[in-house]
Image (cartoon, rainbow over all chains, first blue to last red; front, side, top):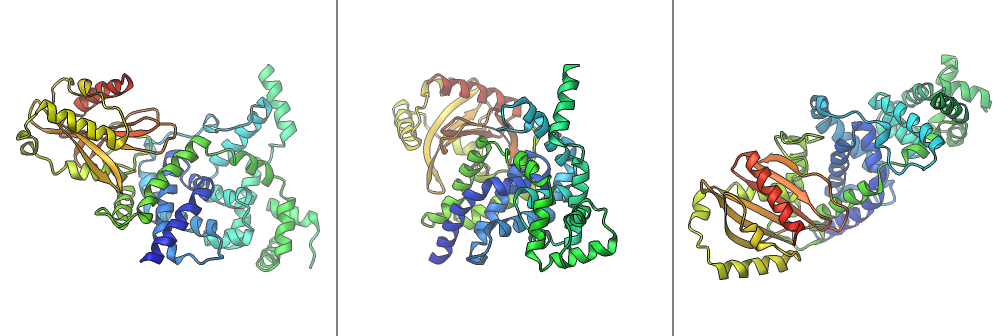
Length: 179
Length: 256
């Protein structure tokens, strides 16, 4: 019992550090910030409960994201879909902590919008590989799909972002704004 | 086999011939360097990461971390009557049962039950007889308020809280949740129904802006917070009454 409490204490401390990453992954699945809050907290709770199962030396964030995905698919997703009518769409204005640069904001907002327009499976793949830095193989294992599926999802995401060459995109937007 | 950069870019873009693509996918299973080369060739990774890492906001992170700390604390504390497992199970059940998202006024179950759900469970046991017999002695009430104020380290505007339309102040008492003091200020309304204002200290982070109205355990409730405390007004009354009373109470605390 004492050992289990120690596991839980250590896990609680470690999860504090990983909270932003867990939240971002939850957000990529859920698609809305409020639902991501709930999913991230449920993930942390479950991780604390099961902390004795975590193997020391393993990748904690990968373990947490596996839990997060499991909770989403098995417990929360269907309810979120049923309640989707009450959810607000996420717009660029919801981006926080952006650079004050107007040009950067235009680009960042567009990238954000296009990522969030992707289907859930592609969003979560982009999040794992591009944002969290998982290898293709690690992402495939965590998301329990073949590597080919990971690559296919990323290719689709790249197509969605294809015309967002930073400089060209910004100059076109700035000109458009001036008009 | 070493693939050219052009081949790998074609693969990334999904335009490589299927047989060649399958061969690269197979190689990726074991060839770490190949995966790293492809990642380096993927020009979208960096800008996407830079944009997505701007969320969530620092305020949101701090709030989530504070909530996590509150959830995890029981694991470190001596075993209490609430117990970590019970609380965790309660929260997990609440998450499954309820889905607030952006709901306002109409949420049937709470998304983050924690202390509010436990208070609701407790309050659900209250019946008119629970408060009907309470003798309201001014001196005793004053002492109760002083103890309650000290317990949660918060100035309580007793006079203002004793002057809420249609509510009769009955008692202030110190309870506990997960090793932390929680105070309950009990009222009876014009029909004799028990109404409770409960307050608990929270980590000092920026408060949520709006008051949240929802039904907890079949009772109307209002939840709000300041930088240092969370407040829950709950009872068997119309939601409109709870809203009006919570408005008065919030104003009373801002004028302390």
